[in-house]
Image (cartoon, rainbow, N blue to C red):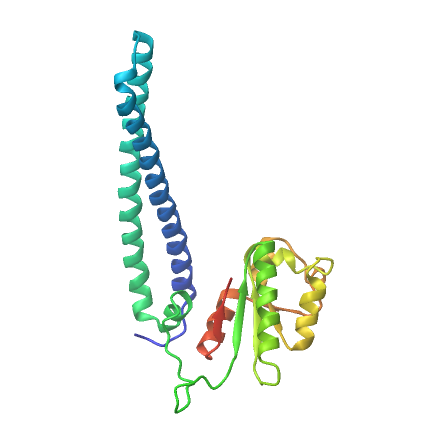
Amino acid sequence: MSDEKISQTDFQKLMLLLSEKRTAHTTLRSGIALSAFSMTIISFIIVMTSKIDGTFNQIIFIALGLGSVVMLILGIYFIRRGFTRMRFHDALINQILYVNHEASSLFYHTRKRNNLDATGASMHYDTVFHFDKGTTELEITISNIENYYESLSGKKFNSYLVINGPGIKFLGKEDPHAPMLTELANLGLQIKVCQNAMHHFQIQPDWLLPVAQIVPAGLLEIIDLQRKGFAYIKP
């Protein structure tokens, strides 16, 4: 496995493959749900068969049964397609991860730490927190960082909060979370904001918290920090 930096092309391929894998996973789950629902209806029809009377009711139950069979077939198709696509994308992802240690450490956290002392204990508590969306997720992240600082009071460590994606929209000066983030920054937390996300959401630098530092790409910042031995935390 190579320890070279991940190329922009491989990084983009990984992001695309991961996105497609999530879509395949959604297809698989939809197929399972559809199959379960259709089986429930079919079971109900079987139980009620002896109680059906009248031509009209029989027609309704036959139509319902046929519809359930169609749903079951679709569900099985979605399950098979989702499972097949997930395996296909896993194979392509693993091809990239196999030859690139840096990519592997980011997406599957398999990189072994080289910063251990003779007893096998970590020599530092350097950590990178990652936030990319959601009010609840941000509040959990802030709470985690607060607990982190409180637990390590008196110890030396470096901590980063890397923000990308829709999470960038929570970094405004007027955001309700601004005071808490500023307080954490004053304690030593380095807040890194993805410039790509800023461009995507058309956010200007003067709109951001003064304590925020702009980096070209949030995920690449995380990769660099993990290469240096930083622990990765994301709620």
